Length: 330
Ligand code: PMV
Image 1 (tube, rainbow, N blue to C red):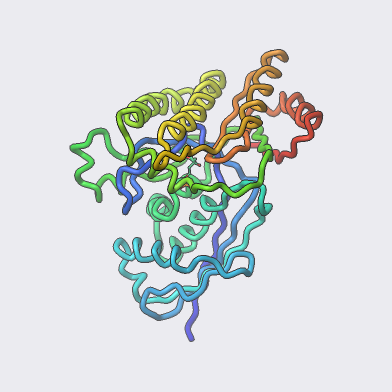
Image 2: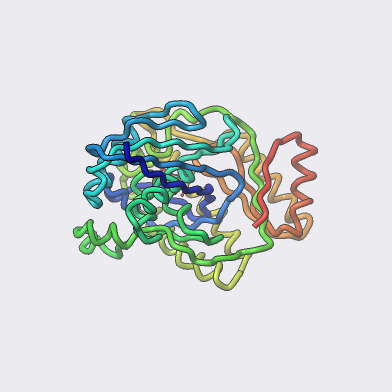
Protein backbone atom coordinates (compact mmCIF):
# COMPACT_ATOMS: atom_id res chain seq x y z
CA UNK A 1 0.00 0.00 0.00
CA UNK A 2 1.26 3.43 -0.97
CA UNK A 3 1.14 5.39 2.32
CA UNK A 4 2.25 9.01 2.59
CA UNK A 5 2.90 10.75 5.90
CA UNK A 6 2.54 14.40 6.89
CA UNK A 7 3.59 15.64 10.32
CA UNK A 8 2.79 18.92 12.06
CA UNK A 9 2.66 20.45 15.51
CA UNK A 10 0.75 23.25 17.19
CA UNK A 11 0.29 24.96 20.54
CA UNK A 12 -2.69 26.40 22.40
CA UNK A 13 -3.55 30.09 22.58
CA UNK A 14 -5.27 32.25 25.19
CA UNK A 15 -7.91 34.71 24.01
CA UNK A 16 -7.82 38.27 25.35
CA UNK A 17 -10.99 39.09 23.41
CA UNK A 18 -12.98 35.89 23.35
CA UNK A 19 -14.73 34.01 20.60
CA UNK A 20 -18.22 33.06 21.77
CA UNK A 21 -20.78 32.18 19.15
CA UNK A 22 -21.25 31.40 15.48
CA UNK A 23 -23.18 33.21 12.77
CA UNK A 24 -23.04 30.04 10.74
CA UNK A 25 -22.77 26.60 12.27
CA UNK A 26 -21.63 24.78 9.11
CA UNK A 27 -18.80 27.14 8.19
CA UNK A 28 -17.99 28.20 11.77
CA UNK A 29 -18.22 31.90 10.97
CA UNK A 30 -17.88 33.72 14.31
CA UNK A 31 -20.32 36.43 15.40
CA UNK A 32 -17.39 38.64 16.38
CA UNK A 33 -13.64 39.01 16.05
CA UNK A 34 -11.25 37.67 18.69
CA UNK A 35 -7.59 38.14 19.60
CA UNK A 36 -5.23 35.78 21.39
CA UNK A 37 -1.78 35.49 22.82
CA UNK A 38 0.38 32.44 22.12
CA UNK A 39 0.47 30.00 24.99
CA UNK A 40 3.19 27.59 23.92
CA UNK A 41 3.23 25.73 27.14
CA UNK A 42 1.87 22.45 25.82
CA UNK A 43 1.89 20.96 22.34
CA UNK A 44 0.12 18.57 20.02
CA UNK A 45 2.06 16.64 17.37
CA UNK A 46 0.09 14.92 14.65
CA UNK A 47 1.06 12.37 12.03
CA UNK A 48 -1.44 12.12 9.18
CA UNK A 49 -1.15 8.94 7.10
CA UNK A 50 -2.92 8.87 3.77
CA UNK A 51 -3.45 6.16 1.17
CA UNK A 52 -5.86 5.70 -1.77
CA UNK A 53 -9.45 5.34 -0.57
CA UNK A 54 -12.82 7.07 -0.47
CA UNK A 55 -12.49 9.91 2.09
CA UNK A 56 -12.78 7.82 5.23
CA UNK A 57 -10.94 8.34 8.49
CA UNK A 58 -10.02 4.78 9.43
CA UNK A 59 -8.39 5.46 12.77
CA UNK A 60 -7.66 8.26 15.16
CA UNK A 61 -5.58 7.81 18.28
CA UNK A 62 -4.45 10.41 20.81
CA UNK A 63 -1.48 9.30 22.89
CA UNK A 64 -2.14 5.79 21.60
CA UNK A 65 -5.79 5.74 22.75
CA UNK A 66 -8.55 5.55 20.09
CA UNK A 67 -10.59 8.79 19.94
CA UNK A 68 -14.02 9.84 18.62
CA UNK A 69 -14.02 8.74 14.96
CA UNK A 70 -17.46 10.20 14.24
CA UNK A 71 -16.41 13.71 15.26
CA UNK A 72 -13.30 13.63 13.11
CA UNK A 73 -15.13 12.08 10.13
CA UNK A 74 -17.63 14.92 10.38
CA UNK A 75 -14.74 17.41 10.19
CA UNK A 76 -13.31 15.66 7.10
CA UNK A 77 -16.78 15.59 5.48
CA UNK A 78 -17.10 19.36 5.96
CA UNK A 79 -13.74 20.19 4.42
CA UNK A 80 -14.22 17.74 1.52
CA UNK A 81 -16.56 20.37 0.09
CA UNK A 82 -13.65 22.79 -0.26
CA UNK A 83 -11.01 20.25 -1.22
CA UNK A 84 -12.60 17.35 -3.18
CA UNK A 85 -9.12 15.77 -3.39
CA UNK A 86 -9.78 14.55 0.16
CA UNK A 87 -12.36 12.08 -1.21
CA UNK A 88 -9.64 10.09 -3.02
CA UNK A 89 -7.84 8.94 0.14
CA UNK A 90 -8.38 7.29 3.49
CA UNK A 91 -6.74 8.51 6.67
CA UNK A 92 -5.07 7.41 9.85
CA UNK A 93 -4.40 10.11 12.43
CA UNK A 94 -1.89 9.58 15.21
CA UNK A 95 -1.73 12.46 17.62
CA UNK A 96 0.38 12.96 20.66
CA UNK A 97 0.01 15.67 23.20
CA UNK A 98 1.61 16.56 26.50
CA UNK A 99 -1.39 18.18 28.16
CA UNK A 100 -1.59 17.19 31.81
CA UNK A 101 -4.80 15.22 32.07
CA UNK A 102 -7.43 16.81 34.26
CA UNK A 103 -5.68 20.17 34.60
CA UNK A 104 -8.54 21.84 32.80
CA UNK A 105 -6.62 22.67 29.63
CA UNK A 106 -8.46 22.09 26.38
CA UNK A 107 -6.39 20.52 23.64
CA UNK A 108 -8.93 21.20 20.88
CA UNK A 109 -7.19 24.37 19.60
CA UNK A 110 -3.75 22.78 19.28
CA UNK A 111 -5.31 19.47 18.18
CA UNK A 112 -7.26 20.84 15.24
CA UNK A 113 -4.48 23.30 14.38
CA UNK A 114 -1.93 20.46 14.16
CA UNK A 115 -4.31 18.33 12.07
CA UNK A 116 -5.12 21.27 9.77
CA UNK A 117 -1.38 21.95 9.32
CA UNK A 118 -0.73 18.29 8.42
CA UNK A 119 -3.65 18.40 5.95
CA UNK A 120 -2.30 21.71 4.66
CA UNK A 121 1.03 20.04 3.84
CA UNK A 122 -0.75 17.24 1.98
CA UNK A 123 -3.03 19.64 0.05
CA UNK A 124 -0.32 22.28 -0.44
CA UNK A 125 -2.29 25.02 1.30
CA UNK A 126 -1.21 28.50 2.31
CA UNK A 127 -1.21 29.49 6.01
CA UNK A 128 -4.49 31.33 5.46
CA UNK A 129 -6.19 28.31 3.85
CA UNK A 130 -4.86 26.10 6.64
CA UNK A 131 -6.24 28.47 9.28
CA UNK A 132 -9.66 28.34 7.58
CA UNK A 133 -9.74 24.54 7.77
CA UNK A 134 -8.65 24.64 11.43
CA UNK A 135 -11.53 27.01 12.19
CA UNK A 136 -13.99 24.44 10.89
CA UNK A 137 -12.64 21.88 13.38
CA UNK A 138 -12.68 24.17 16.41
CA UNK A 139 -13.02 27.96 16.28
CA UNK A 140 -10.11 28.79 18.55
CA UNK A 141 -7.86 26.43 16.53
CA UNK A 142 -7.64 28.99 13.74
CA UNK A 143 -5.64 31.22 16.13
CA UNK A 144 -3.15 28.38 16.75
CA UNK A 145 -2.12 28.10 13.08
CA UNK A 146 -0.03 31.28 12.61
CA UNK A 147 3.32 31.48 14.36
CA UNK A 148 2.92 34.98 15.85
CA UNK A 149 2.77 35.80 19.54
CA UNK A 150 -0.40 37.83 18.98
CA UNK A 151 -2.98 36.49 16.54
CA UNK A 152 -6.30 38.00 15.44
CA UNK A 153 -9.30 36.17 14.01
CA UNK A 154 -11.55 38.67 12.25
CA UNK A 155 -15.17 37.83 11.77
CA UNK A 156 -14.97 38.55 8.04
CA UNK A 157 -18.07 40.74 7.61
CA UNK A 158 -19.32 44.22 8.48
CA UNK A 159 -23.02 43.93 7.90
CA UNK A 160 -25.72 41.30 7.61
CA UNK A 161 -26.09 42.18 3.94
CA UNK A 162 -22.54 41.09 3.29
CA UNK A 163 -23.07 38.04 5.44
CA UNK A 164 -25.54 36.61 2.93
CA UNK A 165 -22.55 35.51 0.86
CA UNK A 166 -21.23 33.03 3.39
CA UNK A 167 -18.59 31.52 1.10
CA UNK A 168 -17.03 34.97 0.71
CA UNK A 169 -17.15 35.70 4.46
CA UNK A 170 -15.63 32.29 5.16
CA UNK A 171 -12.59 33.18 3.04
CA UNK A 172 -12.08 36.38 5.05
CA UNK A 173 -12.25 34.87 8.54
CA UNK A 174 -9.07 33.14 9.75
CA UNK A 175 -6.31 33.44 12.31
CA UNK A 176 -3.53 35.79 11.24
CA UNK A 177 -0.48 37.16 13.00
CA UNK A 178 -0.82 40.70 14.33
CA UNK A 179 2.52 40.81 16.16
CA UNK A 180 5.27 38.24 15.67
CA UNK A 181 7.11 38.88 18.95
CA UNK A 182 5.50 40.28 22.09
CA UNK A 183 8.28 39.68 24.58
CA UNK A 184 8.46 40.36 28.29
CA UNK A 185 5.02 38.99 29.11
CA UNK A 186 4.22 36.02 31.38
CA UNK A 187 1.05 33.98 31.43
CA UNK A 188 0.34 32.15 34.67
CA UNK A 189 -2.27 29.42 34.36
CA UNK A 190 -3.68 28.43 37.73
CA UNK A 191 -5.33 25.13 38.50
CA UNK A 192 -8.21 25.48 40.93
CA UNK A 193 -10.27 22.64 39.62
CA UNK A 194 -9.79 19.73 37.27
CA UNK A 195 -13.44 18.75 36.95
CA UNK A 196 -14.63 18.19 33.39
CA UNK A 197 -17.10 20.92 32.48
CA UNK A 198 -20.74 19.89 32.21
CA UNK A 199 -21.36 21.91 29.06
CA UNK A 200 -18.70 22.16 26.34
CA UNK A 201 -17.86 25.60 24.92
CA UNK A 202 -19.45 24.49 21.65
CA UNK A 203 -22.74 23.80 23.43
CA UNK A 204 -22.45 26.79 25.75
CA UNK A 205 -22.04 29.30 22.93
CA UNK A 206 -24.94 27.77 21.03
CA UNK A 207 -27.16 28.34 24.07
CA UNK A 208 -26.11 32.02 24.25
CA UNK A 209 -26.66 32.63 20.51
CA UNK A 210 -29.92 30.75 20.12
CA UNK A 211 -31.58 32.46 23.10
CA UNK A 212 -30.51 35.98 22.12
CA UNK A 213 -33.05 38.52 23.32
CA UNK A 214 -30.89 41.55 22.58
CA UNK A 215 -28.30 41.15 25.33
CA UNK A 216 -26.10 38.85 23.26
CA UNK A 217 -26.37 41.20 20.30
CA UNK A 218 -25.30 44.17 22.45
CA UNK A 219 -22.39 42.06 23.74
CA UNK A 220 -21.22 41.37 20.19
CA UNK A 221 -21.38 45.05 19.24
CA UNK A 222 -19.46 46.21 22.31
CA UNK A 223 -16.82 43.55 21.90
CA UNK A 224 -16.35 44.30 18.21
CA UNK A 225 -15.61 47.92 19.17
CA UNK A 226 -13.20 46.82 21.91
CA UNK A 227 -11.51 44.44 19.48
CA UNK A 228 -10.47 47.42 17.35
CA UNK A 229 -9.24 49.34 20.41
CA UNK A 230 -7.30 46.29 21.60
CA UNK A 231 -5.67 45.77 18.20
CA UNK A 232 -4.34 49.34 18.28
CA UNK A 233 -3.27 49.07 21.93
CA UNK A 234 -1.30 45.89 21.15
CA UNK A 235 0.47 47.57 18.24
CA UNK A 236 1.41 50.53 20.46
CA UNK A 237 2.23 48.17 23.34
CA UNK A 238 -0.15 50.16 25.51
CA UNK A 239 -0.34 47.47 28.21
CA UNK A 240 -2.74 49.36 30.46
CA UNK A 241 -5.40 49.33 27.75
CA UNK A 242 -4.56 45.72 26.79
CA UNK A 243 -5.06 44.55 30.37
CA UNK A 244 -8.18 46.63 30.89
CA UNK A 245 -9.92 45.18 27.80
CA UNK A 246 -8.73 41.66 28.64
CA UNK A 247 -10.49 41.77 32.01
CA UNK A 248 -13.64 43.28 30.55
CA UNK A 249 -13.87 40.69 27.78
CA UNK A 250 -13.42 37.80 30.24
CA UNK A 251 -16.12 39.08 32.58
CA UNK A 252 -18.48 39.93 29.72
CA UNK A 253 -18.11 36.36 28.46
CA UNK A 254 -19.21 34.96 31.80
CA UNK A 255 -21.95 37.57 32.14
CA UNK A 256 -23.34 36.45 28.80
CA UNK A 257 -23.09 32.79 29.76
CA UNK A 258 -25.07 33.47 32.96
CA UNK A 259 -27.65 35.49 31.04
CA UNK A 260 -28.90 32.45 29.16
CA UNK A 261 -29.94 29.46 31.25
CA UNK A 262 -30.42 26.21 29.38
CA UNK A 263 -34.11 25.37 29.71
CA UNK A 264 -34.05 27.02 33.10
CA UNK A 265 -30.87 25.30 34.27
CA UNK A 266 -28.10 27.82 35.03
CA UNK A 267 -25.07 27.63 32.75
CA UNK A 268 -21.87 28.66 34.51
CA UNK A 269 -18.19 27.82 34.50
CA UNK A 270 -16.81 29.97 37.34
CA UNK A 271 -16.78 29.07 41.03
CA UNK A 272 -16.61 31.42 44.00
CA UNK A 273 -12.89 30.61 44.31
CA UNK A 274 -12.30 31.64 40.67
CA UNK A 275 -13.60 35.14 41.32
CA UNK A 276 -11.97 35.34 44.75
CA UNK A 277 -8.57 34.55 43.27
CA UNK A 278 -9.05 37.13 40.52
CA UNK A 279 -9.97 39.69 43.18
CA UNK A 280 -6.89 38.82 45.26
CA UNK A 281 -4.71 39.17 42.16
CA UNK A 282 -6.03 42.66 41.43
CA UNK A 283 -5.71 43.77 45.04
CA UNK A 284 -2.15 42.49 45.13
CA UNK A 285 -0.93 44.10 41.93
CA UNK A 286 -2.60 47.42 42.85
CA UNK A 287 -0.85 47.33 46.21
CA UNK A 288 2.48 46.62 44.52
CA UNK A 289 1.91 49.30 41.90
CA UNK A 290 2.16 46.96 38.89
CA UNK A 291 -0.26 46.24 36.04
CA UNK A 292 -1.77 42.96 34.82
CA UNK A 293 -4.95 41.17 33.87
CA UNK A 294 -6.84 38.02 34.66
CA UNK A 295 -8.95 36.10 32.21
CA UNK A 296 -11.03 32.91 32.16
CA UNK A 297 -11.97 30.61 29.30
CA UNK A 298 -15.05 28.42 29.60
CA UNK A 299 -13.68 26.99 32.84
CA UNK A 300 -13.02 27.94 36.46
CA UNK A 301 -9.25 28.48 36.35
CA UNK A 302 -7.96 32.05 36.25
CA UNK A 303 -5.10 32.94 33.90
CA UNK A 304 -2.94 35.88 34.92
CA UNK A 305 -1.10 37.99 32.39
CA UNK A 306 1.53 40.49 33.40
CA UNK A 307 5.03 41.67 32.66
CA UNK A 308 7.65 39.02 33.37
CA UNK A 309 9.54 41.47 35.58
CA UNK A 310 6.52 41.50 37.93
CA UNK A 311 5.66 37.78 37.91
CA UNK A 312 7.36 36.94 41.22
CA UNK A 313 4.78 38.95 43.16
CA UNK A 314 1.99 36.74 41.86
CA UNK A 315 3.95 33.50 42.15
CA UNK A 316 4.63 34.08 45.82
CA UNK A 317 0.93 34.76 46.41
CA UNK A 318 -0.02 31.50 44.66
CA UNK A 319 2.55 29.59 46.71
CA UNK A 320 1.16 31.03 49.93
CA UNK A 321 -2.35 30.09 48.88
CA UNK A 322 -1.23 26.61 47.81
CA UNK A 323 -2.58 27.08 44.30
CA UNK A 324 -0.91 25.04 41.56
CA UNK A 325 0.06 26.82 38.36
CA UNK A 326 1.94 26.64 35.07
CA UNK A 327 3.90 29.56 33.74
CA UNK A 328 4.73 30.52 30.17
CA UNK A 329 7.06 33.38 29.30
CA UNK A 330 6.77 34.93 25.87
O1 PMV B 1 -12.86 26.93 19.89
P1 PMV B 1 -13.77 26.40 20.91
O2 PMV B 1 -15.03 25.86 20.32
O3 PMV B 1 -13.07 25.46 21.84
O4 PMV B 1 -14.24 27.66 21.84
C1 PMV B 1 -13.36 28.44 22.57
C2 PMV B 1 -14.09 29.33 23.50
C3 PMV B 1 -13.26 30.11 24.49
O5 PMV B 1 -12.11 29.41 24.86
C4 PMV B 1 -14.11 30.34 25.73
C5 PMV B 1 -12.89 31.50 23.96
C6 PMV B 1 -11.75 31.60 22.99
O6 PMV B 1 -11.79 32.53 22.18
O7 PMV B 1 -10.78 30.80 23.05
